[in-house]
Image 1 (cartoon, helix red, strand yellow):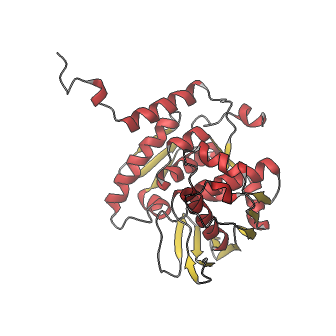
Image 2 (cartoon, one colour):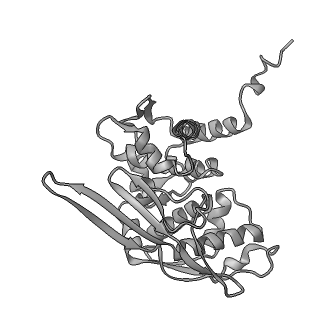
Image 3 (spheres, rainbow, N blue to C red):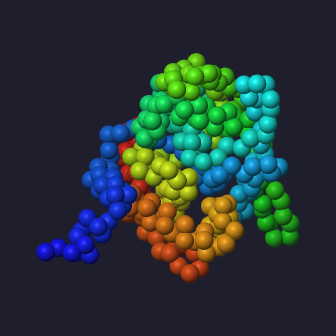
Length: 307
């Protein structure tokens, strides 16, 4: 007789089983036929808000010497009223990935939000309801109007300096919203966005390749998506072991946590899920931070050369 404690089905959750299945598939097919997605290097180093920052004048994230500052843009509602808004959550991360992927694929700043975006979002598990389409367009609107600044603090011994850039994701946009939120998402058709020159150049400089299967498996948590892109980026260029302190990790990923131990617990939980999908990553959680060691690339170079 098998007791509940001995029942293997009770020893692993459906979530863990899903991740293990995807991780196994990625290991068996490192050169998988599915088209790669891309993240801009910027978003592998810094992150957008996890939740709506609300009525605050500025939102800041830091990664060592680099600081990202986002100030809300003014968005116009259907009734003509205007209010300051921030992009936040999972959807803007998917949108950034789609925009980067399309820019790499088409080598164009001008993107059409038609079948390409709908197919991309369905591939990541988002349903095709009118409500989902409205949320996507709302977050795209928030991204398009947000004002961003990046500054790099530099130390040269007897002097210090700053290098910075102000930019927007979009220089132009045309968004069409359905008045019937129960309608199928054909309302995205006809919507367009033109990436700003600065953002477009940054996208093409060194896009970070990501597996769409992993993005789908990690959906539902902006921290998981950020950790995945960050780990792929860091290990791709890492030449020697390095330890990233908990203070540094909190500065980059800990926006929603006031207490360090709560952030550490959330980080470790989400990071374990990422490692299931990138088992070749050589890492070690320490009391002082996260130890990163040179590891096999998540996506082999031969796969990239074939694109």
